[in-house]
Image (cartoon, rainbow over all chains, first blue to last red; front, side, top):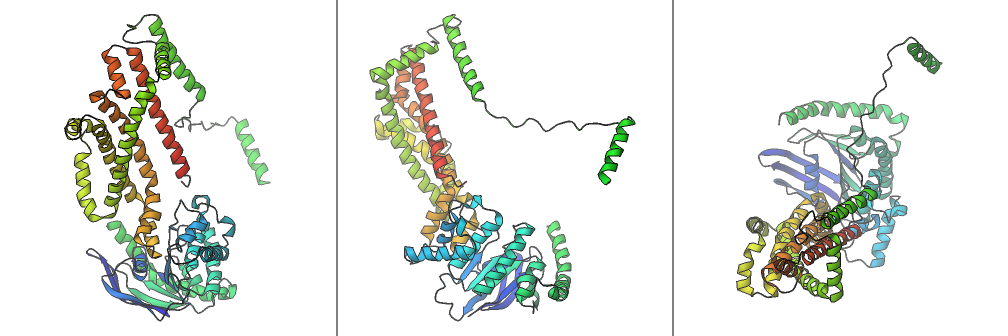
Length: 257
Length: 278
């Protein structure tokens, strides 16, 4: 099974946002999309996830998603998108309630998802009682509960402080090692991209075009090791060279609009 | 070592008569709190002043009876069953009128919040009809529905309907769209998105609509009863005025004040119970 994005174009009114985006994501592959602000990264993710209709182009899953997948394409949102009146447990259950599951089966899926994200002790808490990092863990648990075939993550760490981000990055990596879910991950943070990606897709400033695709050939668990540092620094520089001028130009364009 | 030298420098500076200006505190005020003692004292002095004005004949006692007289009139109303007779008539009208208006208003507000057709037709309609003082259309409602209960209930219902519709669609519009998108991303069916996301998310706005519409209902029931009723607090106040029974009149007004207060307390309790997640 793989995700195929073909010739996607998009515009908001007269403003072109995305130009001819094509990419594939293989099963259990992590593709990180980076680009300057306003380049259409989030728009692309909405289109991939079927929340926005593109002006042109198609998004499809080739091959059958796993049988146990209740929601083959599942989002994790930047602002967590938790229902503030529901407890952690019920926020996760929200993704399951409309499926034909027995009460016991649903409880088991919720229980598992909470255990896998280290939230079991917080099942009864309300979102307002949790830190940002814990809230995003609820977002991850909700996504895992439906066994996604493809996980779409829209800047999941950008609302968090630097330390929490570091902790969750490590958690994401561990979850990936275990779950092997194909993922499209949007960020503007180069370090995040290099920590998580199998491939990094670099978008230009608006209208977003694919500028380059860079593979990260270091196994994920080794990326925090000192041995990997020179190679990662080299990749970081390469990415930064690709993005720097785009980011500066995008900044100036935003100021003038 | 470093600390010692800093201290030494400071000591030297002071000793040598160098200027040492303390930073003045300037962060005070703008944080009023409430004091129960002051509240009781304020209310108490008002009552004492009022009684004094009555006892010392500063004002014509026929025009302004003292607080004790009013309390006596209220007690009399209570033990003779008069109060129950009038209050129950008013509460019945408020209850039915408010319930009908609130249900209709929430339904229209929800429709405006969900459908382009309802929004296109509903918002101009509500905007045109909302500002009409509902008591002004009571005469035509009396012609249509008779002088009995129906026209009073309809006046209250209409008075409640429009603000509830406005409060509801405003509240629905204010539910963060990302929650709706989240639900859609999990393929949650439309009706469940409405029931599990939009309605609970709109509840704070709908409850504050309850607060506004309840005070409108209280206003309208009194006005409607003054126009044509022999029972009800409004009718009682009107009759007392016609007969110059100012102690009775003010007792009726006091009942209305307490009724408004009780409704407010009830709604606050409801908010605390339903919106504990905020």
